[in-house]
Length: 192
Image (cartoon, rainbow, N blue to C red; front, side, top):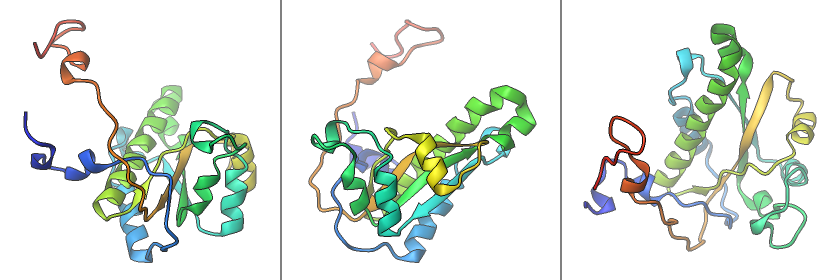
């Protein structure tokens, strides 16, 4: 097996979800790189259903935080308070009307997948540029939609807090390829 540094895109192997941020702001040109990378994701019929709301006002970040669910990383608190420490929070949304216009009702699911690819591009680009982030899905979508005036035909697929981090985190373990790959049909091993 090759070492991970030999792969074509090191950021894929270096990316780690981080939840502790410094106070360093993100320069506008760096933010633009993140957003442009997002728009280079593949999408069904090239409908590009993504919409990104960039939150940088502290009070607006706190409002978003109050629409998150508690969980492991909330450390016993009611919300995911660490999100407000990120320089920016990108609210990743899917404008399902675009894809549905071309493909009908099935396009709703495809549009969500397309936006997920865009979020991955944001996270990988952030890693390549020395930033850190995390994909947060534990949200009260309706509360955030009301707060940000998001129309009914737009879905939120998650929050993406991004910033500079000094957190020491290692990539989590991954299942071996032989457990998740199949050859020409399901349950026929590709790797022995």
